Image 1 (cartoon, rainbow, N blue to C red):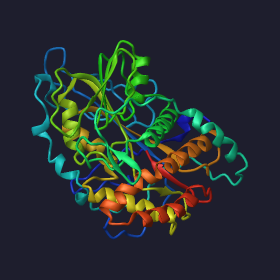
Image 2 (tube, rainbow, N blue to C red):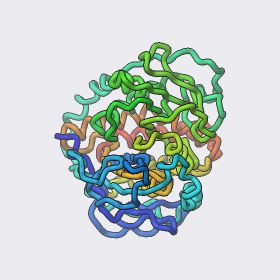
Image 3 (cartoon, rainbow, N blue to C red):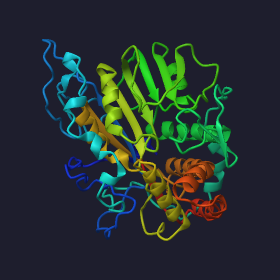
Image 4 (tube, helix red, strand yellow):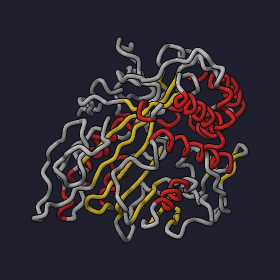
Length: 443
């Protein structure tokens, strides 16, 4: 099946309201501790949707004037500085124009209407569990006979990149290692098992999105990959674009020593002040909702450091698991997922931050903002070869990361004992392998 069959077409009225909610039929946000209203009737939610938000820095008109603030229709995607005609493959995209001050070279931060205050989890007042009205596009497979055969090929999907020796002494706890630079800011470990998981996750993303990027970039000169991890995205992008100078930044120096000549890495925190000595044509970030506390500031930093007409692309997901029926209710998997959301919230981060990306990018001054959603089954419960392989890969991704997702976050943020965490994970692993639980993620 074509990977585009997994795309979920977002309705044109999906917007963030001034009161912090997201208008139906988008899935609203909430504090992890909020009371959750009863789910309303409607079509089942998508089997896993993946958010990919991208926006372009405004470009001046030929006469030197700034572009006008003129929204495009939701099912079109305009090129930077263009009149907004749809490109060849722009299905399932939301676009909008905004006219901020890039023409004069001034940053848009001062003109953003309070975007920063909307980022903290405590400002999200809607329910976590309000149902999505997006069509799943996936069917439950009642025959599991081909699920096991897919397992052996999952590992082959991930490229192998050797990690270089560290230039810092990492923090060691619970048999894992964590970053030393800005210690404690990111809850996931950075050791070899986690690096291998990150590369499997990279393969899932490339398979799901159909490539390394969704933005309509053409021979970008300078490229920045925020939160580069093992550097696999930056390395592959550099190989595909030998004309580009690609830089990857991360809290952990775990990238390989031998990389393409047009690729390099730096230890950096994107929430600090950006001090690059040049601008970028393309900025990429992926799965950073557990890393940043203030996405509006990140978006403003991106825009301030983009060339006019450059693109920023953020690929992320809802940490909150979804389900096409009630098979997730009352399971150890659901309880674990709630603990992750609460732990992340106590760190000052928002596991549902992606729902606000579009409005926050517009507030920052981006134009041609596009939002796309994809469906990712959590295990091989769905019919179809493509969905089953994606589900198998995602199940392995969660299983491989389960201990890393949980041990530091639950012990430090939730006060659980390490033994208590391990006992919980035993039950969660059973649920993850249970194809009668039809869960998915919004990506």
